[in-house]
Image (cartoon, rainbow, N blue to C red; front, side):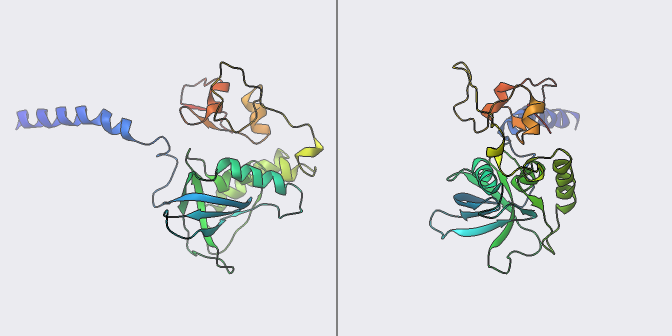
Amino acid sequence: MKRLSTCLLTICLSAAPAAVLAAPADAAAVPKGTKKATIVKIVDGDTIDVRFTRTSRPVRVRLLEVNTPERGQCWYKEATARTAALLPVGKTVRLLADKDPKDRYGRSLFYAWNAGGTFVNRSLVRYGYGKAVLYKPNDKYIQVMRADEAKAKRERLRIWSGRCGASSAPAPTPRPTPSEDSGNALDPRYRTCAEANRNGYGPYRRGVDAEYAWYQDRDGDGLVCEP
């Protein structure tokens, strides 16, 4: 019996590292029960088109619990551009439904996580691209979304800034150097993570986001510029 237990323990220990290495980078960030889809089109900041299979017809998705500015309103362009950066066309998105699957317009209602594990709905609210809105009975994340909205208000980010769009203030531009791996970077570079957060960017993950190399990971947890 002792010999068998020892063998089993040996097998478990030898198998464990392989299991850890096989885990996807975003496994801890994305909840269970999501459906994988491909981004087809960005309609605006809170609406996207996706395809669940290569041969299926596009499905219009309304992102739950977030409401971004409509066309012609202040920050519409910026919110739409931010969603396009978080959910690039042709890339994978993971979608999670709540209680009511569709709205009165026939759009499918989902929470969305991008390939890097970023909770897109929440990110848009946290960084001032949209407001937290309850669409009853879908309320799975409304409390945390409202808390993030309160933070964005206190920090006067974007729609809460009193300005009408980024054009009303100088916009920072990326400053990569030839030695940096910035080929896949989507965001501007800032001097510090605090400055990046104030402007609505971050966090960045080691091995996932090119912007990670721009900042110092002081605690070595593989994440920089945590808000």
